[in-house]
Amino acid sequence: MSKINKLQEIINRSENIVFFGGAGVSTESGIPDFRSNTGIYNYTPEEVLSHTYFKNHTEEFFDYYRNHLIFNNAQPNPAHLKLAEGERAGKIKAVITQNVDDLHQKAGSENVLELHGNVNRNYCQFCGREYEVNKILTSNGIPRCECDGIIKPDVVLYEEPLKNAIINESIRYISEADTLIVGGTSLVVYPAAGLIQYFKGDNLILINKTPTDYDSFANLVITEPIGEVFSKIEF
Image (cartoon, rainbow, N blue to C red):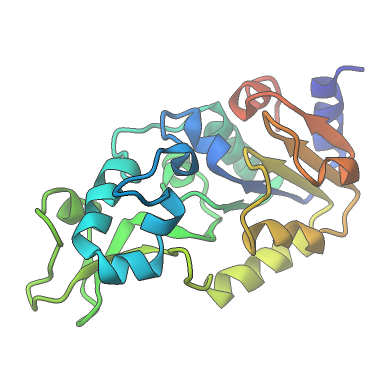
């Protein structure tokens, strides 16, 4: 039996599927993995996207942010679309994502848990007023609110904690699932990657172009682009 056929067989007999995804889901929509970008201003992407860098080099932070994390023209790929189809069919109970775009929502998924926030949400650090992403894109230097406060993207930067409510909800869905599909992530970014340790179900499926440290624990490992894999299955 081929791996695609085995995946289809697992999906057919599953009733509570949770999907956990990373950057590889969005790269197939033309959004690059920022971790692979070269450093800027003699810093690595992880350093530029840290709370410390945002605080101490705010203008340089936004210069990098505009050019490397905002892709308004990106469109959902077959993976996003198939997951939305799975939710409508009652199979996919939740999509948990490490990505900060809204491609899952654009594709039609409704129950999306964003571990690292979303670039399309922004707020004034002083008064709390909310802003669309275009406010960031059309501003020069440091984007500021009408009250002169700095507008911060609603994303979790390095050195910042994940939101407890999102973590707890993710743990609940993962622990109740009979099948967990992990796709487009090498499972090296913690604490997000540690969430799969809460899975108690029957089928752990890993779909990633490169091996992960969790491959030996999986029932099925597919080393192919996730969009290509999902285009061959049905929910």
